[in-house]
Amino acid sequence: MRCDATRLAFFSPTGTTRRIVDNIGLGLGFAVAERLDLTRPECLAAAHASRETVTVLGAPVYAGRLPAEAVRRLKRLHGAGGPAVLVVAYGNRAYEDALLELCDLARELGFTPVAGGAFVGEHSYSAPETPIAPGRPDARDVRAAREFGRVVAAKLERLADLETAAPLRVPGSLPYREAGLSADPGPITVAALCQACGQCVTACPVAAVRLEADGPVTDAARCIRCCACVKGCPEGARLFDHPGLLAVAKRLAATCRERREPETFL
Ligand SMILES: Cc1cc2nc3c(=O)[nH]c(=O)nc-3n(C[C@H](O)[C@H](O)[C@H](O)COP(=O)(O)O)c2cc1C
Picture 1 (cartoon, rainbow, N blue to C red):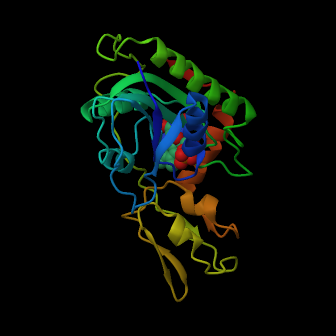
Picture 2: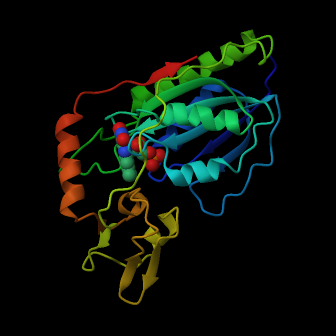
């Protein structure tokens, strides 16, 4: 089938999903017609939709599912029957039902899923004292993402049309795992380090941080625990100090040491 453009759409609070999606886009080799960073609260619905455009949809894995906020924002897209490549980034533990959920969502939005991949990104809760997949995606992951893009482009070229293609199958089970946020409170600010630059306010995808006279304040009810403000703070002043979350990070750093490789499905 004929494809002449790529559309990239991703939700990526700490940037790993974005890097994987961008490299798959490079591997596909078509002109990028639209690049939608759905992490930004102001990012609106896509304008570009056609059967000749291949859309790469990317989101991180939260507790084996897609983040609810990512689902809400991906729902701004329309597939117009065009092909979609599904991408989840996970922190070297497991992706469980997230890729299946993305595949089902893509179909609901009118896309035809043609390929899917689960890639590894540095865990949002990774820290120097509790490293979990630090530095990923690394050079090897980037090569794998580009190669995946090339293989998908070759598949599309071989396909006579989308209607006759075998439906994409990806791992995951129904009903999906129960979704939910940890009850632990959001990140705090270390006042002695904070320069009140407002980077945490800008980085937050859900507008949960506001700058007050004594520094940034987090609205715990809005916070999705994504760590965008923690990783985005130039002074290292934003951190999680709750014992529950620190214990999770410590456990993951101990149990998720073995390197997982990207898995792709065509
Ligand atoms: C609330 C939350 C839950 C997470 N759950 C999982 C999980 O179930 N499995 C896993 O391997 N990684 C998990 N992660 C790690 C992220 O999936 C991983 O770091 C991903 O690369 C982040 O993507 P981003 O950089 O695009 O934000 C979780 C991260 C957060 C913030």
